[in-house]
Figure 1: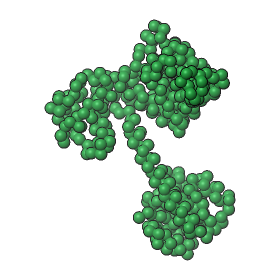
Figure 2: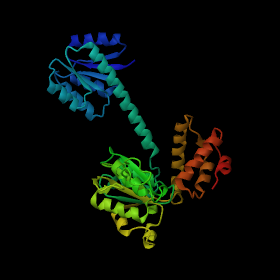
Figure 3: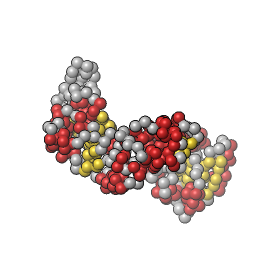
Figure 4: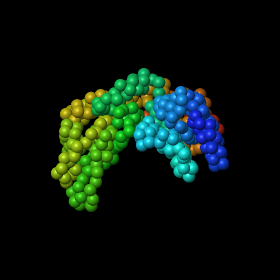
Length: 385
């Protein structure tokens, strides 16, 4: 049964609304003034709050403001006999879902309450989804290198500095990029990822900068490139060490001038993008061999973050394994399996040439193939290096 709080200093209004809404199968609570109402909002999880604006002690706008400051997600519907456009605008600006004048039209009020509940459910679902996503992209570990990465991200993320992430395959470079974006001032903007190693050299420019219709044989319509897609957000150029020198030159121009030109086009397009680049290659060696432009590297590497291989942070393996066991249980909708300490010790002794990606695959294999508990025998049987 949906729960609804009525905050109003007029007893007759509270009684009338209670009678109507209880008939509509709502569980009703009442508060006779703003102070009492705010206390109840902060102590309970209501589906909707109906709040009068003009009240003694604390008016409805103040109740709304304080509830929003406390992080309350419950939708507020403001009601008032002093229904003016100014009241409505002020209430919605402060975070109210809607504004209903007194005496309320009951059909409109019921529709507004239902819509507010739908929005509240959507907000809750979105928060749960974001929490799941953020948990998926957690950087797990307490080793010194991982603590340093966390500190660096916290310092660098709020700035506009470009970041160059290095480290072996499977070590978590993408996670670093995602957290830099999530903790940045661009967090509400897009995060666009390009795997430079997976795109043929002849298509990388079209992928990054887009193309105009007719620019080449298969260009049957205009295409928006990744730079434009990432406007006001973050562009993650993964495995940039595999990018052709021709594409590197165009990326360098885009960074210098904050504008791009689509393939086959003549018009300059302004872009506002933060670049995070990553590679598993020895970039200094690539520069020496003239396979990577030194001027582009210096444009990209304002901050350099080195992600360690798993063999350099073996103390983190138990934490990673526990994280993966929980994650896999959530994905499969099954109880979390536990691992014997001897099996965990065995995992810590392995080389893990595929780093965290390989470890996760092995943990998933163990979950599938083992019985209720993952034993040392399971580990010896199913861990293949």
